[in-house]
Image 1 (cartoon, rainbow, N blue to C red):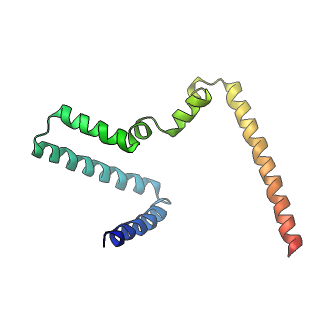
Image 2: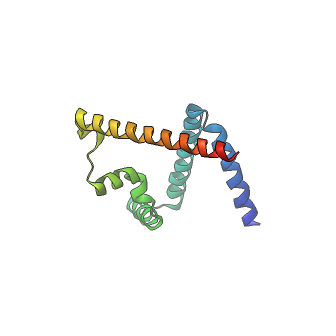
Image 3: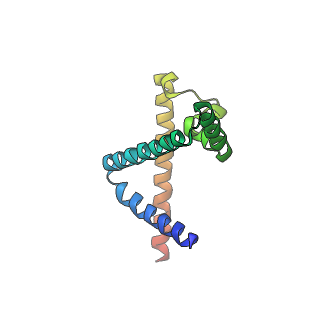
Length: 127
């Protein structure tokens, strides 16, 4: 029974996400209301249970760290990866560095287009 419920919500999520992805402002509004409503419920429940703020903080940190969400949510993968690579933040980069990266990306894009064309030629020859 529980598997069916999870499967239902998984499929529902996929359909809703697919539809709302093409309407980012509406998606953001719905998501914002949902997040605020969720946290309001958590807050009110903590008040009803009479949890002290430090107890709530401790429980929250333990749960977030235990699930691996703490670092991901508050820092994000991109910052961690750029830190491990020793990259500068975008606002710290010079115009020359940004232009150099742009040129590298453009070169990669052209190579990908060339490879794509070659693959299409191979596929056309097979047909």
